[in-house]
Length: 328
Ligand SMILES: Nc1ncnc2c1ncn2[C@@H]1O[C@H](COP(=O)(O)OP(=O)(O)OP(=O)(O)O)[C@@H](O)[C@H]1O
Ligand code: SF4
Ligand SMILES: [Mg+2]
Image 1 (spheres, rainbow, N blue to C red):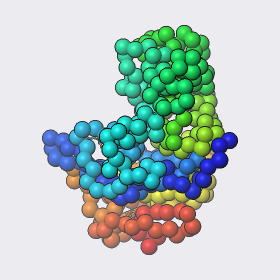
Image 2 (cartoon, rainbow, N blue to C red):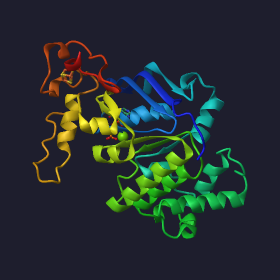
Image 3 (spheres, protein in one colour):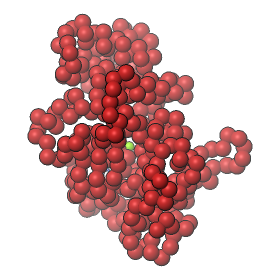
Image 4 (cartoon, rainbow, N blue to C red):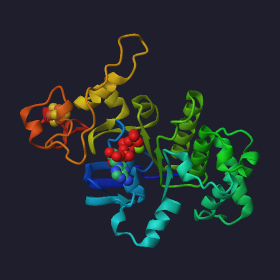
């Protein structure tokens, strides 16, 4: 295994605010996101639909929609501020530094080229040794397809995206990301279309590869169980902010934020100890989000101050941070 210094931050997001322009006005979505990913580290972002997980990782990969506006904050990739990168550096960021496995595999595959052609192109532009050799490209594609347990890789290379099932297309996207070494792999709900056994296999492969190469992983998932399985550290997101972060084991030992506690109670109890209760209410309207803590309208423990001011980050337990007035 390659030696690496795992205290290095591959990604450092500092106070990131992002809004989206719509015909009704600006949706103030990201509300000061802070997150770090070290070399060799696997982190997971969890949170309800619409809380800003994809917006966060798209900001890191520099693939935000045209309507998006970065209002404040900085993102460092390997120590470099990505908002100050030249266009060449930005291009290298996508072709060599970061690979993204998208939530929707159809959107990330080109319908008019075969899988083989598309995967070879990724290798061609990766800058690795022998990247322009047809033989190297072929071998890497075959190996990557095998790693995601796709049957008959030679045949799949000849197929067009429409000839494959949703689950197969999703595994192609994962194979693409595994076909060249990257500093950072971003996987946005990479297994939503897969059945449980394949999901498990694919996540194990992803995890193993990241560990072997000393690259970093950001995995987005709705499932706290999946996050615990794969990630060293979990970032819990609510309405555009990271509300709690710590190691996976510590989070399951003691969730501090009322929102995380609510998410935990949504995990079905297989032991038969009760039914999932869920969190009443919904994510706020980003056109006019609540003043103070954005979770206050749904929080069973809200104090008067919660409706007035934004809670700062507290660290009541070493390496366990929470943004909530209860810990002030
Ligand atoms: N291009 C866009 N234009 C306008 N609003 C957008 C755009 N992209 C995202 N949003 C809004 O930003 C908010 C956060 O969206 P985002 O996709 O980041 O959430 P998410 O946490 O990834 O959700 P999911 O789990 O459903 O994928 C949502 O309210 C969404 O409607
Ligand atoms: S800051 Fe207040 S409203 Fe927000 S989660 Fe904590 S107790 Fe609840
Ligand atoms: Mg998303």
